[in-house]
Image (cartoon, rainbow over all chains, first blue to last red; front, side):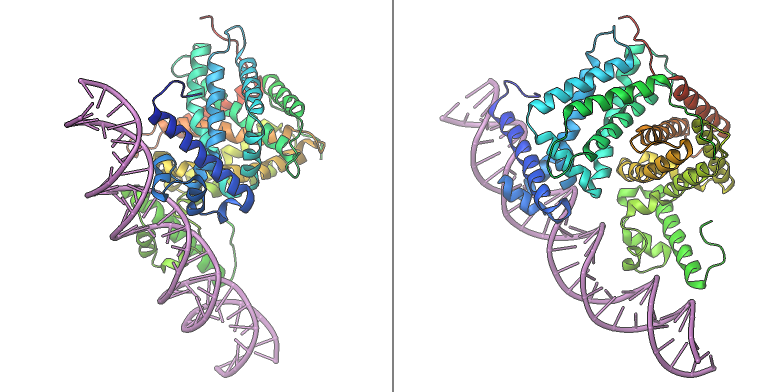
Length: 209
Length: 209
DNA sequence: TCATTCGATGCACGTCGTGCATCTATGCAC
DNA sequence: GTGCATAGATGCACGACGTGCATCGAATGA
């Protein structure tokens, strides 16, 4: 998707990158991220140990790379949503598009998420990947609503939208058990509810003691 | 705050912990987190290298420890807010209380945040610390609004509230320059605006092309 | 074809993080 | 106060991580 008709060099690079990522996820799924060594990963991907660091700066980054790519795709998709859609609507639609595309690619995206979710050591990396897109999304939102320089809305909206997506996705994954991929329909429903909550206002009165 | 009249053992432990944390922050502020070695930190805190790992599992965790404590305090404070306050109101008040207490302790909390903000390698750790409080906050919210088991509101609200706080704090820190602590009044104002935005509903129409 | 460039690799080194054994100060019972 | 049990501090060894540097070979373009 980022590489169409490039030279052999570029094609080889993206192939290697994918090989490393897949190897990392496969091994992590089998043995647990902590127990997998870089040596194993590089052997599986058939590259030298040193080469690994030409692509990723850590094991964790490699495992999370797929998800990070999806986040980036989400932001890109948001950018091209028609102006007729409100911000939250556009975010919603963008999420659906990425979701469809990812599920079309097979279950790899999902299994990667399952691995990530099960491993505490990946949480920081995943959150960092998400945060990395936050500023990009904020910028896109600022353009879309034509916000003033000092308007806090874009950044706030970006952060909250991504947080909402994360929670929704997380709750959905929670329903997954033993490699059984839960219904995509459920995830759509979750997104729907989350977005509704956001647009309706988040506050609630406290219940009496 | 977590240790009142405990035995000498406990007191020494908390003192050591604080010494490590302070040493880590001080050195990180001077040389940059990446360039500081554990050896330096342990020398500064006057402990053995091995002992460090009895308290923290990494340099980064030590630096972020202070902020992590404030997050925990925030959640604790929220728990004890009166039921007469709505969820967002209670969150707001809790934030103000923690803010007051932290600023009363001097500028240490702020300088720590400044260090953290300037160092990309600390972002994952900080986000992880924040995420760690998310479930605790979600639970507190669930109690407060007496939510049903399958109600997504508590987790969503917790995630979004923390995201909102993070962004607000971040924007405020951005105005800080060269060790000059920006006005706390400004931070209060930022919180006010953020919470208003959240309760009012986050959506916005897109501007025409 | 030839020179250039860029990525892959090997090597060396410093740092990190942990398991294990040991030593010491603390807490406790008497 | 004495002595025991325990928890925390320390030392040691080791495997893994991450990076700078030099080299080699394949891909590119003139």
